[in-house]
Length: 301
Image (cartoon, rainbow, N blue to C red):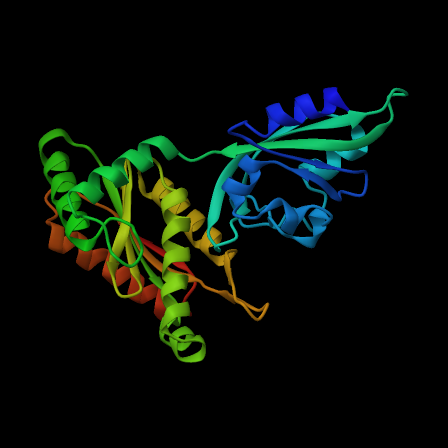
């Protein structure tokens, strides 16, 4: 018992999330870092089955892995160690990119009696946090979402255009609009609508690179500025944003959930384009996505 307490004390002070499961994938242990990364307390998780879809692991295309044979289930089956880049569902609704490492647990007869999964924040968290602190000091954060504000985005866009003209540094712009936000406000109230905006914003923020910028443009719209991409790469980023927002959901007090989707317009900026022209192009692409039925991506150029 002393040995178990000693090791548990170590695991409780790790920066990585750690949880254990039995052969049925029932969670038997959940450390403090797992609580911090996921938003779920141990008492909310321990005793639950992975397939109960608490964390709702998905891949970059939005495929739900917990309902099928996820990496953890495969390790319980064949005893092999695994590593994967996935996206978990935070209790507040947004998607968090994580790197998971899985290993089997065996008894003295080498029989598999469970598995351990270690997961860590796979976003550029430190750089992102430092950048947000800097913007906060300059009063450049949006009050509602905590993301860079429209004024900040306008300044960033101006800088990117200047860098494109002077140094040839290519970038893309992605304009995203939350579908049916007015209906969400009418059905659930403005406070829930604001929470949905925060959920979408955090999903975009956590899943953008440290040197890219994503912020709250206006109302239900978000703007992303993505460096060093061609049309194909920009489309990939836009589809990832669409997929991860679409697999997020906001839990309500009555046990129900609110889901959201985004319509997206994107384009790679060209030499000679002004800030207004770039915004006009991605705005036109966004309108096309909406005309085609919403919850889709249109890339111009």
